[in-house]
Image (cartoon, rainbow, N blue to C red; front, side, top):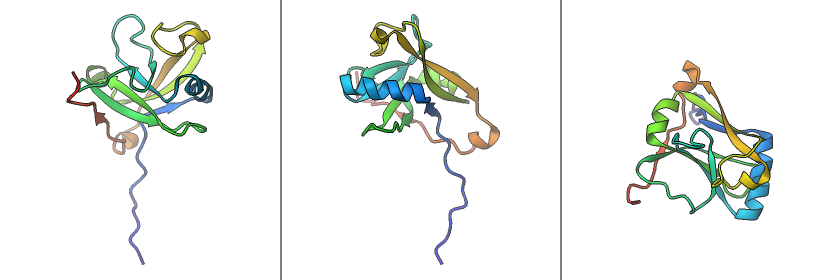
Length: 142
């Protein structure tokens, strides 16, 4: 009889609401595969920015905190964050939602009259012990 793995499944650091998933499907139809970046900088730095893959270059100062599996999309939507911002958010589960209102002009949802928004909660102790690891950004990027 094969050995069983009694470890609990890894806990994802990010999730997406149904409304945000529907918007991602629509925006992917217009812009192609998408990704998020959370910088924590000025302006709309507290809002996740959504870009077509390849239009925002991640580098050594960034970490991928997760990949959103959105029903109806062929590819997962990567969620990146600046490493310095992650130092503040590493103990929180993040959910990407969408709300009415204009966000940043650089994020692809801006013309839609809505903006993406992060909702967060603190991980439980059990979740903290089973988190999906982050992935470092490209250390060869400028």
